[in-house]
Length: 262
Image (cartoon, rainbow, N blue to C red; front, side, top):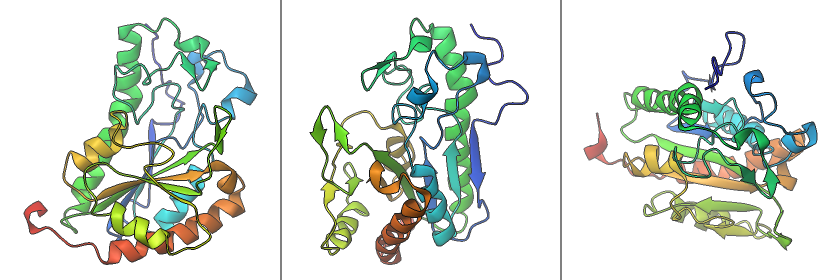
């Protein structure tokens, strides 16, 4: 078992920004970073491989930060690559610590023992999600129902199949945020909008929205933005502003459920 996965000088497992924000939202960015702890080497990957989607959601951090600024909302971001441990997968799922991802072998994840996996979860996964719970508790002192918005990005082509959507709205059984947001986005005539595309949130993979949204009854939605639209910083800011306007229209009309007041 690796001793000291995160050394004293390493960044913490997550970053919280704008914790005192007064907005009704909590912004999440599970896959903000491609950082790998030095104790794991580079998991056997090259710099070029770590710069790809396989390691993180390109552009998502910039969009999430701009959402945090425009909503005046707290933001929680993961500080380590999904290849170390995926913050949006259930521990124990094969995708949690993937030995192969998007067709790329991850040598440092081959033969990971249960003890190794537990250490990655204890030092990175659980602290991140405990931080989300704590921030939601604080938010609920001001709002009975803070809205959770999770920001992700997706590749424009997968398995040689083009993905035409500019943005996808992922949701499961609760349409409270997703349905009005889809309607609002579809008013933008130049947008190609995906309803549970390019991924279906009803597949039992996504941990964050299941745990903190569906699991608590709080309003929630996951936004997927095509990476080629937000790779450049300036483009990411432009798309963040546009999507924020649509999202804000929905947040403004969200009902409040008194049963969820704490």
